[in-house]
Length: 630
Image 1 (spheres, rainbow, N blue to C red):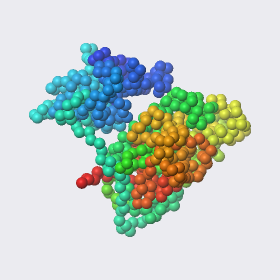
Image 2: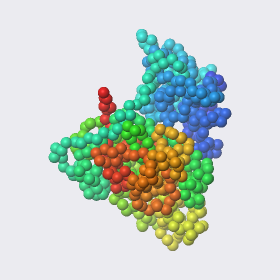
Image 3: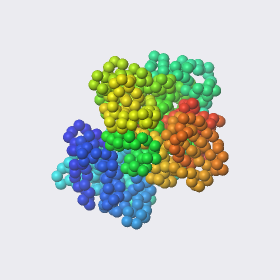
């Protein structure tokens, strides 16, 4: 949080001051972190007495550490700091008992007290995550707090606090804390108490608000074609692929759209951010255990490279896509497509263009933020030279590549598209170059990493030494292959190689092991258990794409549906069956997108079949106000 200004910031890990109980507050200036002392993500995990506090030196880590040292309890792990406001209890470490938490909105008549948690909402200075600080002193005109990940400056001599915040007392006894940042807001404070007088009522959400709503716009003679701009590269490629201006390929669906309520959208956003963090934790867990990593069926020759990619490029993921089932039954994730996800163009451009053309003004597009979030993700990435966009000869990949090219260029990164590998050549220095002789140093690809790995698997018997990829040799007499580009040590690829782990369905049983009974997860295992058989299950290849080779079985082991494909010989996982909602005769899957690891937009895919595939349609998705139920 908090790039407050351009003044000096202390080196990462510098002690800025000491708060109550001898709790040290540290600088979280990540650009200055010492890679020798902190070589990988594991090294950033903070523990006290073997209890996980969080990641060095984030605001949540300090809050949990302060509570543990001074109170002996901690709050549960949360995805975002603002989620603390919704927590209902803390856990006493000594005996695992629970103590109640109550949340009070800024302006409450119950004043904050030393040791309570002050919570900022998401936005502005605390964009995406919100913020938490510990209140240490309370006055009628100000409060004092300690916090991490804001200013990163050493406290003045004699201070035992990070900042003072001004307070206004209302005539009715209300207590208002000034945020100090014009573009951020304080939600309120969280107190460990049984007294709920004046507290916010944290109610369970009415799950009827999670139902996706079907709508249809009236036909006023709108033309079915001509509403996309052929002068724009990405839209021209899309028109060519779809053979016209359309979102759904089925003409019968051209006036139909679907809606999410604001409450459902907030839950989806929260789930996306939390699940991304969970998948990253599971990835780290897998990379600490070779036995688990072996279940992912990745060639052992690339294991060192995956470890290196995770250690060095953990924060360089541009975008991914979660697939969900959402209805009044709940929100459940099926998988995370963190490598070479699709449907970005439809979400970020086409569904809004559709709404403009067909006159839909209700709510707002669920993908309205995606394009600018992708631009921001590219601005924050490490790419510092010419970037090549590599795609296969496929119409869908063509418009996907052009859409991403637009975001990359808006981020100020020069780039060009390479279609296939036929025009690649070896440079005089042994590096791969494009047709103009430019070295290929940075790559964004539409190809899945598994496509490159298939080249490795196919050639293991012919060239063992060449497949030890940390020692890849040049082939002066042969044209460069895809693997010679994507797996050369000097080439930096998006998405990074480590995304092979969260994209692999073997991660799903690991998640269930790490987070059993988590409300967003489905029971998943490497073996078919009686629990899974009880209500039906889905069989998925651990490496698969586009809905291929999936089988759905009911509680009696009868096959409900299956798809063909090329992954039928891969190892499988078994996932609890949780059907998609059926709306207007179509099964509806909700997809959400991440940009730099946080929620960036959503779309829906629909199909008469219960299995969504690459051929499934997309309908426009709008976010609308909550209806009032009687």
